[in-house]
Image 1 (cartoon, rainbow, N blue to C red):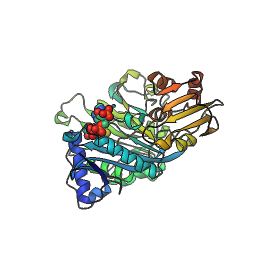
Image 2 (image 1 turned 135 degrees about the vertical axis):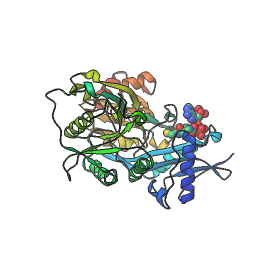
Image 3 (image 1 turned 30 degrees about the vertical axis):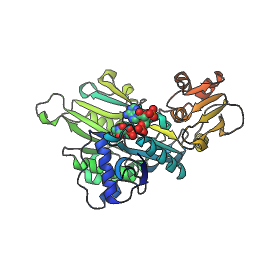
Image 4 (image 1 turned 90 degrees about the horizontal axis):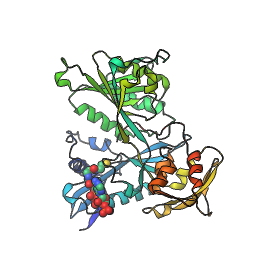
Length: 405
Ligand SMILES: CC(C)(COP(=O)(O)OP(=O)(O)OC[C@H]1O[C@@H](n2cnc3c(N)ncnc32)[C@H](O)[C@@H]1OP(=O)(O)O)[C@@H](O)C(=O)NCCC(=O)NCCS
């Protein structure tokens, strides 16, 4: 069997690839009817690749360019990897591996420093050098018990905007209020087009609440009711907040008060909050909320360790030497000295040896070097160096992106 990987640009091939991905994922809704030319707006040109076996398209992968914020605020070029799927009758023959290798070479050739994805299963991507770099929480709040403490601020004004208007406004709100938190990702234009299509092709109601005065909006929540079959008689009326973009304390409070104060609603489910979200501290009764799941959020691939390590900031005056090992990208193997004033390549003997997926896990500050050493992802020739590394890589906020792609 020979597998041929190539970039897809023809409209029919792109639709075929989208259907291969859906068949692989099993549980996604079918692709809605698309207008001529519409598929091209859902994808970044030149980045959808297909795997062909005997002329048949059997696997696909995709990416879109965006930026990733590192600790200290630098934004580095990033590939948002998505739509990876292989038809079920062609799995476990190395097709995903061929796609991932091809894509990594392409990402490196484009000069992108990192790539990231959201994983359908946690056992797939480490072999390609991806590591878990941020976590998110799903949280449910029982509104009847969810009074905020008397000293908690009011936040700013919140208004509903018609969804058609929202698709113009929300990308501007994100771009104009970029969080400083490490792990922040820009949402690429194809992501907005796909989110819009998903919303418009689903039959139920959905709402967009925006925080801030018109012209100076600084946050938003996209939400919808669930379990609407028995809505009139239900005593558990629930909304799901699919997208909670609240980068400032004011936006966070304004949107929170709006959502928790909605008439009729017994339960507000946040699909994704940062693990250090202040919500439990704001509540009089912290048991009004419950963390229902912890998700591995950003699976990060460090494609250019030199640029990634040099671009982030470090804390304190320690110093250490780390060797990065990358099985798939040999040019990415190097040794670095890392200190409070930065990171640079060195010929010195390494104190720590890190596999590239381990570097991904610590880069944004979401995991400790000590945990990785315990897991065997890092080898410490000098055990003291682990504590130094954890001090250097400390971050003020838990890394977080806040959306799925
Ligand atoms: C995940 C998927 C793309 C893998 O494709 P594939 O062509 O079977 O992968 P490969 O044959 O290249 O497998 C490479 C290795 O990964 C392992 N692997 C692949 N999928 C795995 C999975 N879901 N769980 C555990 N291991 C997996 C294989 O066993 C193989 O291991 P080896 O190198 O030790 O032999 C495919 O199973 C799929 O389409 N799944 C459903 C859709 C999906 O989950 N997509 C990911 C969206 S984020």
